[in-house]
Image: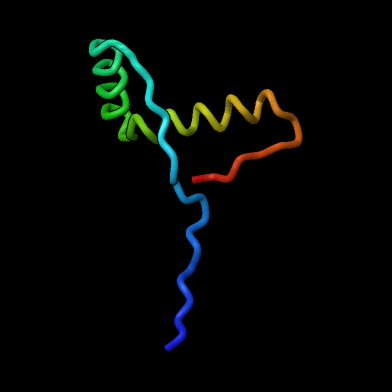
Length: 63
């Protein structure tokens, strides 16, 4: 009774749609698979690093 749901830290609740060529996507996804990671994980990491390197003093949550 009265259980509270735990809020997920770093919840992913938005999408970013980009247009790239099929060849570019395939090369990226294949390389990510070779490196045992996902394309989404690497794009999120790039975005966090990009913002952090250009916004001193502001950090995005990990996730």
